[in-house]
Amino acid sequence: MNTVTLKPSKEKSLLRRHPWVYANAIDRVDGKPGVGATVLVRAHDGRFLARAAWSPHSQIRARAWSFDETEPIDHAFFKRRVQRALAHRQAMVRDTGAVRLVFGEADGLPGLIVDYYVADDETARGQLVCQFMAAGVEAWKDAIVAALTGVTGCPNIYERSDVSIRDKEGLEPITGVLAGDAPPDTLIASENGVRYHVDVRNGHKTGFYVDQRDNRALVQQYAGERDVLNCFCYTGGFSLAALKGGAKRVVSIDSSGEALALAQQNVVANGFDAARATWLDADAFKTLRRLADDGERFDLIVLDPPKFAPSREHVDRAARAYKDINLSGFRLLRPGGLLFTYSCSGAIDADLFQKIVAGAAADARVDARILKRLGAGVDHPLLTAFPEGEYLKGLLLQIA
Ligand code: SAH
Image 1 (tube, rainbow, N blue to C red):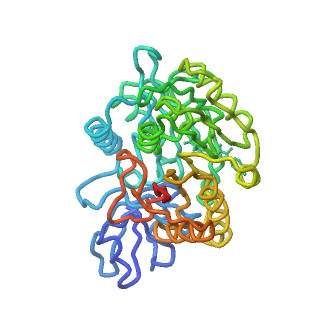
Image 2: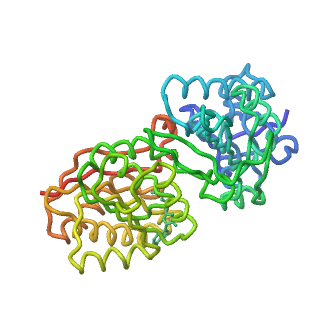
């Protein structure tokens, strides 16, 4: 067996069950592991630490599959991991048409994301959408596909591994059908009583922001009789939730015409009065400023922008961008109004995000109160050993 031996004292993080081995922690490699091959990881004194997937092109040189010395990495291993992931979701997430079935490291499958658009009476067709983002899961793709179809009973799997992070693993971007039939142009996922059209082939990520389910439910809960602004609306996730919740009117902004077209289709699919919804195909930064200058005001605002900080080097610039939109958000709120504000930048932690939002409130000269801290749903668990897994954080604020 190919064996990776760590430098003295570099075993500590693995002993705490953190799943990554950085290149600079490695003392020597015995054997010639191929890309994605399984390696034994040992401490400097020879103690077993983990079985891991070898990523020769990445600074994260190995990712642990298992800390159990007796557990081989084979087809049965992947089946067990997928079974466990599905059992957790079935126990914890009910009545939804879109669920994150596998969330990488937190499900013991580092580098793998799987979203499951579950068949219901109306769609009659389930769809799994996967992203393979590390050499290990790429090497075991066939086993993972077999495990996913076998365990879920859903025959249709589509791959959306068109993600730049694959560069770091020396892998090309790739998309396509992995099993079953090609996905339809749009499939329908129902959530909180709202039907969403999802384009799994051309949409962002796997087609839908499954992580915002609980937050859409909150917006639905508070939107009644309110004027709502949804900025960075994509296909209208929060906009539809607000309409369902009885919003008086919903203004939505996005710079993607295709996303807005699908959002409008979603209004029709739900039988909502299109006159209650306004869609602005525009740059959010400029439009927020213009609306504020024009004296427009709202009772509930959602700011859910794309990842402004893809990595640490971008944090300063991203912080200015977050502050800019949140400042506009506060200026646009009526007294007593609610702001749902998010960051999905892993490089900006919850503390820093709160400081940025506090700075924006100060500049807007409002007293802002945090009512709730927000995050992704329970199908996006966070391993205590792996705080890097946290990316989505949000605040629900109310101004005086
Ligand atoms: N809130 C959405 C997800 C947002 S994804 C949901 O819950 O489904 C981020 C969105 O921001 C994308 O749709 C993208 O088109 C849009 N976007 C990115 N930069 C923008 C800009 N400068 N102005 C307006 N929209 C922008």
